[in-house]
Image (cartoon, rainbow, N blue to C red):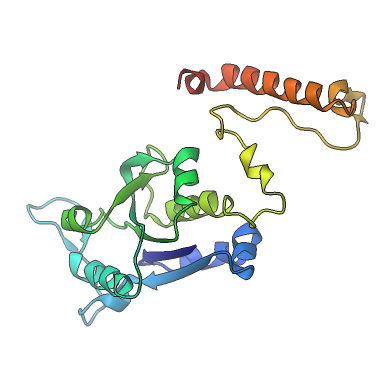
Amino acid sequence: MRIDIITVVPDLLESPFQASIMQRSIAKELVEVHLHNLRDYTSNSYKQVDDYQFGGGAGMVMMIEPIDKCISALKAERDYDEIIYMTPDGETLNQGIANQISTLENIIILCGHYKGVDQRVRDHFITREISIGDYVLSGGELGALILCDAVIRLIPGVLGNETSALTDSFQDNLLAPPIYTRPAEYNGWKVPEVLTSGNTPKIEEWREDKAYEHTQQRRPDLLKE
């Protein structure tokens, strides 16, 4: 999978891709991540990529020209399955969206900044708009990182045990059940006996019951879905 990220602050994105699961996925050549500084695509001598909005109002707007040049340059080299814009008014990211995007081959992620982008960018270039929640950040970079992390861990071969991602919360519209590890008893607090019984069917039944119970308590809305 190839991910091209368009941003005005590439330095903000470099470090997360040099650690943990995302770094390992790149080292295994399962994922390519390329950062593109939007200022490299402006014809403005001051490297300006934003301007005042027509009609007045507070906040600067990202101009269409440098975004067009960057996206067009990338599309001239390969086909893209999605061109994603990170924006507070996009569809809210969930596990289903992450699952779907993880099956794609090439994607572009455009990180908004300032007040946002010229609407013509959204009308003519963007194929999907994604939000990470009902709040506003200084830019789309942190949202892009969250999207990348959620997607990359699902790509076959990235995790040591590929079934791990399939048992995460939200994969089946349930929250994950409680989990335990050694020691089996600590300060008098014991692990449920069924988990140390070796009885796989009983363990799976316990996990399913606890997942449903956990979801009912914390996210009953998921059960309605």
